[in-house]
Image 1 (spheres, rainbow, N blue to C red):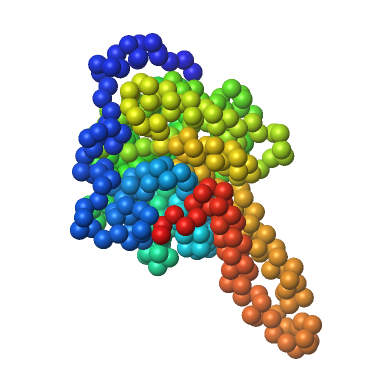
Image 2: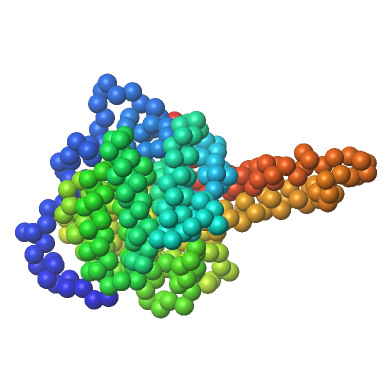
Length: 402
């Protein structure tokens, strides 16, 4: 990708002023200083952040707090109420926030694979239904929950539009969007087109206090219908000039809130050591580049997210957090953990799962309490929650509420 960087830098001083959320002063929407009268739900977080789904100002305050305190929030792909509940159970255990993330394919699965998915109807309905489930139960876990959707490429924009319509309808009725944030992944398009489309949607999202996550460069590997296994390796590494251009463009929109999924060698999936070359220093260099252009004292003006986090070393994860990563995506590791919990349940109770009647205790003994689907599914939930507690430890996200 080639940029007209020289032209941009020549005019930036006169033409660009940081958006309110990134410079001083901030708008009331983005003011992180809570009033004296507002009661805090969590000792270590701003007063705007409450148990349950967080949006708007509360979401921005939460992400600012993560950046300032040096932790990242697990962002977990889910495919049903079992994996959704495992996420919130884990957050309750480790004492921190959680991001519950839906993909287009995950939404379709939640609606049911037999449902009519013409014009992405099932993918949209499944995500909306699952978001409403989270809204009904999230506060019961006593933790902040971010409702997010994952990769949306250009061909999938009708799905994104359907989600935005649901957000706008919910906002009209409740004064906040249904979801907290959405991701646009237009990294396969030329940079200028990528950001132009993001900017168009950012304008729409800013009106209902939504955050946009956008991607620069490409995350390698394969996940949920997106296959980048054969991509040119040069596209796995984002340049600071690209991050600055994107920051500059999106910051022109009033009330804009955004995070950047910049590629630094990230790959979806888990691979043998040596097959993935992560370079978190790219994020550090990008922050320094933007800081110099803005002439600000803020050493981490951009909020970054870490895609393809499964299997990464703790050292790489924490070095990325030092560069302003406030969320890491997790999918492959939690998929395995969920299956491994079910596998272990079957292995432990194998002789009780071979028929409805008859087991080691007697030929006429019933096995209903063993093959009740809730038993195996619960084992999957517990294993997934345990794996997420470990992830939170790697992300410094333990006991960050109180």
